[in-house]
Each structure stands twice: as structure tokens, then as C-alpha cells.
Image 1 (cartoon, one colour):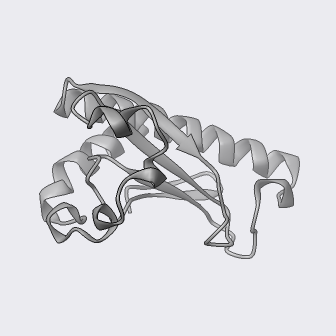
Image 2: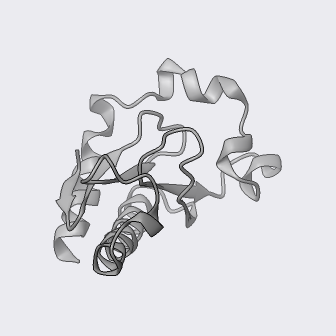
Amino acid sequence: MVRRLPSSFAVMGDVQWLPGYCVLLSDDPSVDRLSALPRVKQREFLDSMALLCHAVERACAEADPEVLRVNVEILGNTDAYLHAHVWPRYAWEPAEHRSRPVWLYPAEHWADEDTALNDGHDALRESIGRHLDEG
């Protein structure tokens, strides 16, 4: 876990072929979509998502000057609980993938042990957490 945020938890993703990938998880596992939350909780979740996006972008830019942007997705098609994916995107990505959704990367990226979350990502996780603390 990176940080506890209002109505959510910020965590590093299991895969890190795009270093800094994070997921924002609702703190209510019974909620399966944003619209199932009361409006106040929706705003809290979306505000936390924006904070996480800014923190990921800043931390990743400090670690790698080739960061271009951060993509955000709330899907829920496979895992039926409210969560948002926060993907940093980089200039060094292959051109055929850089401008397309992350989900179109080849399947082997999702199971590559060399880029799986590990202790080598601790510094980036700490940096993202620090930026979350700064707001």
C-alpha cells in the first residue's frame, strides 16, 4: 500500500513494466461502480484519484524524465469492485503502444517476472507517498 486516502487505498500495481503504475481501491468492497456511491463519496473517490494522478506524475518525472502523461481508467469489467487504474506513460514506450490503451500491450507483459512489483520499486512507492502527503 502507498497511502490511505479518503474513501480509498492507493496501492502499487502488481505489474510495473510502466514504472509507477498504481491502483486506487474503494474502501468499501461491496461497491462495484462509482455511481453506487453517494455523491459525497463519489467526490471523495474522484478527488483521491486526482491526488494519486498528480503524485504518480511527479514521482515518475523525478525518476525518469521521459514520462509523458498519466492515463486514468475506471473500468470494473473484470473485477467487480470500484477501482481506478493510474498508468504513467513514457516516451520510451514502443510507438505502436505509446498512444494506445495499456490493455493492448502483449499478454506477456502482464506475467513478466522481471517487471513484477518487487523491493526494487520501494523508492518509487515512497516518492509517490511523499507527493500524496504534500497534496
